[in-house]
Length: 251
Image (cartoon, helix red, strand yellow):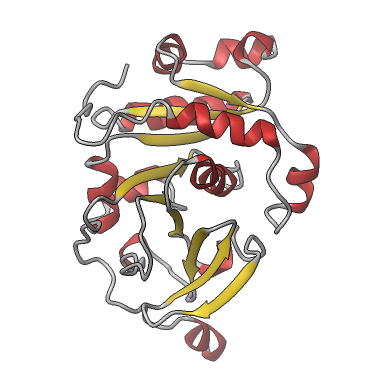
C-alpha cells in the first residue's frame, strides 16, 4: 500500500555489509529470548554499569523500539541514518526506518566521541539472526560474550535453553528477570534444561529482580533501579579481559 511504501525507506548506510568496531571498541551483543522480555533495559543497564565510555545500538525496527523515550537528551537524526540520543553520558542509537529483515539493519555509525563498549541490542529472534548473512551474525558468532535475556517462567526458560543450544560456539551468560533460581516456582525449576543448569552452576546465570514500576512505564529518562545496575555489573564481570579469547566455552 501507499502507507507502507511511505513508511518503508531504504536504510542508510547500506545494510548487510561487514562492520568492524573501532580501535579499542569492544562489542557486547544482547539477545532477548522472547519479545518484550527486557533485553533493551538490560542493554542500557550494561552500558550504564560499565566503567568506560559506552553506547547502545538498538538493531530492531523503529516500530519495535524500546529506546524511544529513554534519552535524557535527543540529538535527532544522524547522517549515518540512526536516530541518536544521550543518557548519563551513554550514546543511544536507534533505527529511524521500518526494517523488515535482519539484513536491513544498518551498520553502527562511526562514533563522534570515544567509545570503548558498544552494546548491541539485537532485537531479532535468535534463529533469524544466526541464519541471515550480514554483519549482525558475524558480531554474535565472534563475540567474546553474548548476553541472553529471559524471564523466570516456564516458556521463558524453554526459550533460553533453545537459545543456548543454538549458541553453542560463543561464550554466553544469561540475565533472567525474576526471583533467584532457588526461589523459582517448582514448574519453572523443572523446566530449566541442562544447558541452563550448567550456566547457573558456572555462575553465568544472573537473576535480575523485576521492577514493577519499570515494567509498567518501560524505559524513560528516570534513573534505572540500583538492583538492575547491580545485576548488570555482575554480568559485566563475566566479560573476559580485553585481549583474551574465551570463545567456545559455553557450558
